[in-house]
Image 1: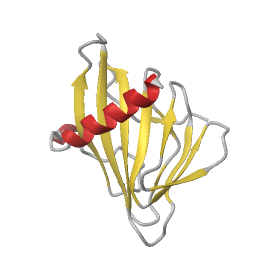
Image 2: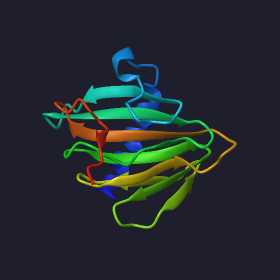
Image 3: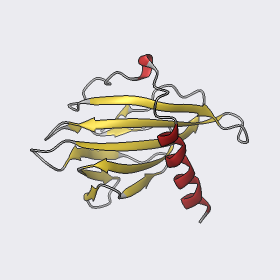
Image 4: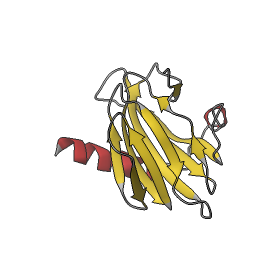
Length: 145
């Protein structure tokens, strides 16, 4: 229950401050075949020293995807689809298609092998909210196989 409350609060905070993007973090990481990745929220958690909450908006073009990846070892992630549908596969779980309004979580150390727009004709968007060590500056790391 606490996790659900934290996730809902994180999502609301990211939406409420969506205009706080920073140009240095709004570039596409290498290897992504998506429209854009933009940091829309970045704030230290005042009651959890050393941790920050970061919101990242990911926009997929029709047929767009990102290569398999990891996130920092400190990262807990709550992702929600804002528009369209996203195919996602985390660890050894089956691939799932999430539609607008649906969400999932990723835990520290999870391997995200599939992240793709489920449509070849329509765009898709997702918001990923991270709770991460403030010192972690790279949010997407290559998947070492």
